[in-house]
Amino acid sequence: MNPQAAIWFGALCVLCVLVSGAMGRAADSKTSEQAAPKAAPKAAKVEKRKGVTIHFDIEYAKVGDHSLKLDLYMPTNVKQKPHLVVFFHGGSWRTGSKKTCHVTWLTRHGYAVASVDYRLTKVARFPALVHDCKGSIRFLRAHADHFGYESKRMGVSGASAGGLLAALIATSGDIKELEGNVGGNLDQSSRVQAALAMFCPTDLYYNATVEKERCDQPNCPLYQLLGGKPSQRLDQAKLASATTHVTKDDPPIILLYGSKDKSLVKPLHGQRLKDRYDKAGVKAIYQLIEGAGHGGPQYRDEIRSKMILEMLARQLRGEKP
Image (cartoon, rainbow, N blue to C red; front, side, top):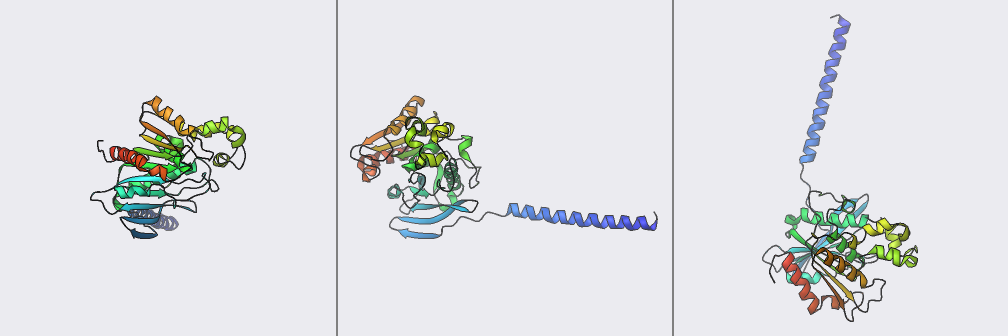
């Protein structure tokens, strides 16, 4: 080998060593990065009240710069891990927050409650908010041991616009378009085992076709949810309807409406979902509460609370009536 060739050969060997070392260090760094355990989720504030500890503002996902959070209500008067009921607030999908939770009374009966915020229509259109809600379910399952509740069998609930979200989660298990990947935890299931939906729409396809004139107005919540005239987005309206997805493997559901509800939500939505459940051979209870409006104490009176607690005890705790 002539001297010039020897010099080039030596330089090449040195370069190979340097590249190999750099690749090794990068691989080691990547391996340790993957192996590093995720930090346990923390609440911004923890407050103890009579019979309950509240974990405020737990971040369950981040989408871009948007932080998605939930509040967790943990009963303290229990001897075993409490089962969890997840709640979604109302507000026509464009207002409202997790601060308004209609089922915190369940903590007095030994259930944990999570009240969830999701992206409103001024931030993102359908199906983003459903992806958020399912992401919260997966997050809560992934961190059940950390917070101390039972998550194998979970319940879901919602009021008004949030009631549709609860009904959708109950009926759309494993529907790819509605799952999303918000928050990760994709090894966890978003399915639930019991549902409670109160004074809520269930069939947006009905609204988009029968109430076309009203719903096609830009100020209509359904218009804003779908990002345009519902009559021109019928496939999306169907996808966003709980009535579209009912199958025999769905969980039991309780549907509550008020006879004096003056909102745009008609009780017939509850009956339409009940009919679909009946056709699929799945248990659904539909009740029109005399004198009740769009919310109020009648939705947790003695009759309704007994019915709700019986369903949760049977479906979550496995207790026989």
